[in-house]
Length: 264
Image (cartoon, rainbow, N blue to C red; front, side, top):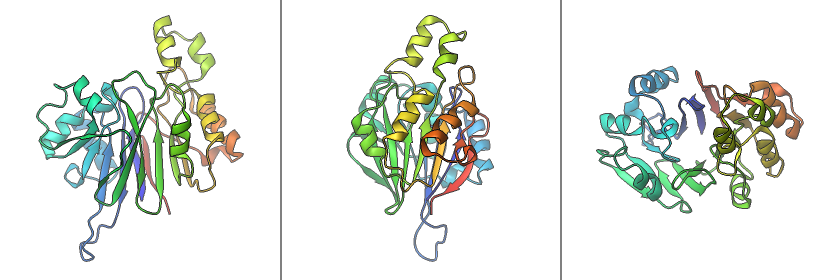
């Protein structure tokens, strides 16, 4: 299994997960799942191409929640390329017009695993200011990729779900001091830093410290705020927990995301 990011941040998010083989001789087709799509159609296609993928190759799209930086490009991409979409009942009902016209639309239970091709997808609920937000763990039968962004705080269930993963994409949205002393209006500071907002660097580090990280091959800091964080601060918080070199911790950027990472 391998994974890559098209981009991560408040201006758009999308994560690509691949499992299986490209060889048709074996009778197995590669599964390519897109988690969220917060980019316009043209931008999405360019970002996919950068990773060597065309939209026609996608097996489907899974959606975490209805906020535009995660769902804004889903419907247009799905309609144009006839892609199936999976999302929670709450996400669909919160924005029915956004997802109108998608032929293959599947509602998921936030506690029930489902499969797309070679990938088992395990949703789990998170505290965020959306209708029925979830995040996902992706499992190819041997390796597990956990993703946690857009959560204001942790829960025991989140940490139980993410413990023992082979790779982890973890939100480090903001530095608390930078947010507190920055230019955001008070109400926005309260939202971002609240229990239904976004994880700060120390929150993320605290979660990481409570996980079983014995199998961890990849760790990527994601959804960094342009105004209220730096890659250096995010990486330092996470690398301190693992007592590893800062260079071992990846960062998903808004412009480039990150290139393919393989879980062996």
